[in-house]
Length: 391
Image (cartoon, rainbow, N blue to C red):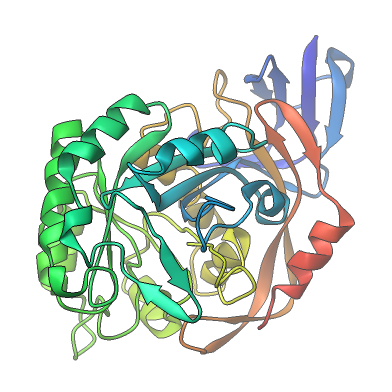
């Protein structure tokens, strides 16, 4: 007898190479069976997924969910249902100096799963608000590889890599130095590095060329002056070389990091993002990013196929964080799932520079399974999602 049976839905699981009508049986927090027509009497609880998409629980690779501990943090549990997200990966909100508080007060009590890239800055992102912006890497004294390595080793069950933010805002006169320190820490830990570049300096080439296989370049479709294309519209050589050697290209939408013009051209050229993430934080949760499902919906309307969009929020981020039992509904995997609806209609989306996109498709969430437990959607969550179609 199974604990739970998701029945009658269209399963879209790129990891398992499945797209069709399959039932998913769950027992003791794991996927017990995937097959067509599993009898309802074999389960204690039935979820009717007729007319819905059944996908692995979405993994948002770039979020800021140290709620209450940082100025930019948002509440992951409050966001989960509207975004279809069962795993939030925090991208450097906390550093070695405050990670324990993040773990004890946010990660451990959360209903959803929260993992993190550890910021190479000891203080994490501490000065991020509408009326002030102090880059955590501007004072190089805050960047210490030894502290980063010690913290990551102590919390290896929650930390998936090292995060560094460089650029005119994030590192100021420190330039590329924090990147070099983060590189050293990541190499010692044998963990991936996630890199953010806001505005040069350092240059795009310096940052991209320092990335190795399985490292992540977030904000990969940023507007000029960090456009991935040159002045003639060609994809830059260092970007192509980085993909060739296995660097992961992540969207990280956020407040200022997705340009529809860049994204449309890159998708048309066949350069799809490896991972689609929201970079949701206090300054973009009410637009332009909103959440992961809104960000995914934008790429549906920019020309990506549904399977590729789902892959970019399940299979690839799971691989990026080294979690083979997440991002899939294969037998034996952790039972995280989301019930989605791909709704046709007339929707308007906005990017980080104010450009509008009129689209005919939008993804909505109708419930989650988190670790084998059913979390039904609410009308409030759906109404909020419906409002997140334009600024």
